[in-house]
View 1 (cartoon, rainbow, N blue to C red):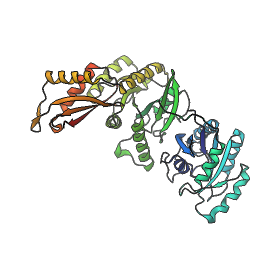
View 2 (view 1 turned 180 degrees about the vertical axis):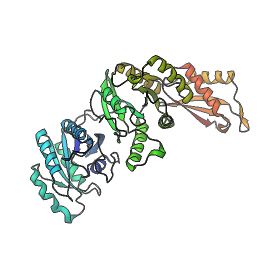
View 3 (view 1 turned 90 degrees about the vertical axis):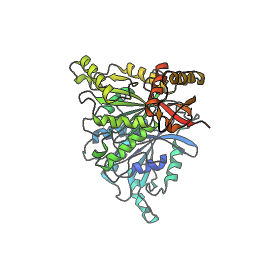
View 4 (view 1 turned 135 degrees about the vertical axis):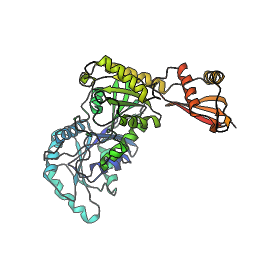
Length: 435
């Protein structure tokens, strides 16, 4: 993206994510009273006084050596390096501490425009809490309350003043991809391979990624936005509140994508959980590509592929139109194949059918196979028209929608697929009663 970037940094639990959510106008970052919730960098677009910019939330940086602290610090450093302006958030209730001093040292070394925001100044009686932060030598601190929205306007006035000017507003025409799957199937590793950056923390600890991260990049002169989502667990196994937030975030990521890339662990094979995960994408009418990862762990890959494809047909009966790619992020050799498949699926997702051609297909289908009696009547399709793409949506004008049996809709869908190669894309058939 060509928009300027604002990074929000600070030690854990100072309210960075709360301020981030205030700036972007939605609950995009996970906010909870648990230390170290935000690990990866979370991006969003924001606007203030007609000025558009990107803002990134980061994990908390601290002196104490906690799990993932080295990776969190590296991610924060990357965000700072990318940023045009940095909002350094400190806790006005706790006061100046060693973590703040360490972050300030990092920022002075980076030589960025830094705005010091003293958070949790919730009333006028706490305004004096900001003065001790002058010791950080980062200019005049601004008193804010992310929770109550106090001082956020003043903070954004300062941000906009420091931002470089952008003449053209950003229009997002990219192909949007969501990485979905069970925890620990290699989504973050594939994410990094596809964008050629170590933008997401990769570890073998289940559930490392809790937030969804949007990354725009270019491959072969085409624009993409890749969303890495937290692994979706079975509903009965979501114990922590944080995991519940992550599941909701993953669902929202599916909602805004064009194509859902379902990752399956080659060693584990197809699990019941995979059906639940892809079920969200099916319900949202998204295009789907299945990627079987960790194939480097399989001894006889050719035999495995045959067995997998047979099992997939059995387990996912209504996904026979979905392409399947076998890969390994360890020896990532088929990147071109993945992006070629993405391009083909996207073309199917935005496909347009001429009304005359569509009606010829529907009428021929009815002549070959008459509609069955159902719910006390026999449905007749008089006319068909494509009403939308992304996904391909077709309105069927009928005498009585309640007389349409599900199996006949499947038959109509298959007839349309026989006429066009709609790889990976769903067909949304809408019944409308002819007036």
